[in-house]
Length: 302
Image (cartoon, rainbow, N blue to C red; front, top):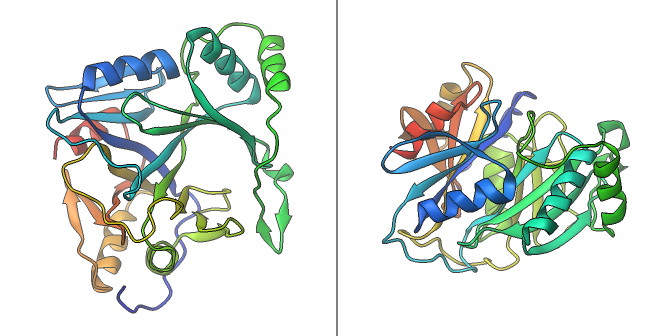
């Protein structure tokens, strides 16, 4: 990793946006995401489809590549994309829907800052569906936000959904990508990149072989772990993660790209937007302002 002065912190308005995934069977995968998560088609062309919320917020872009090899579970890439619901009742309604739809859940946890449920799509892409607790309730330890894995109150979550009335029909307005968790090959190099060069803040490092970073005091916009991928290289031409979008305030993408280039990083482009790979080959695309469906589709076609 190139030597550099500590990066200025990212603007507190920074967030993550939609992810794009390479899919062997785009239509099958899109149908599953619509059924399982209640997403709708926002934009599509012959190569990719953007799925998201009826308020126009894109969640995932599926890029068709029938010839792609299936990504091995131990290489860097996507650990999960985390779909943030507006509230606990929404999570309860979705959990009842998941049971009725026969979705195979892989786990659930109370992280103290949030309540989360885990599953994977038919091509092995990890997904978290969660709700945040209000920020004043987030525990702090040693001056930093503290997360943990504690038992998930499934009965309480479902009861709150039932009490709120209605059934799950689609992802409600306000649903968004809350964070993205990546598999990486080396935690020290990853920290030097995300904290030391890009300018994220470390929020939690109490998990073995994992690191969590964010902007603006959020519990984490990116999770980064070496649990299965330590020392591994990312392979080209495989399914799974294509890009992660980092949404910056207007006018912030170009200066960040220039600073990364000055630090010796290879800064490319996706549809005219700066793009740079982390030390594990996970590609970040920096976007000014809100990412809409048209921008997500354009980037996927680049």
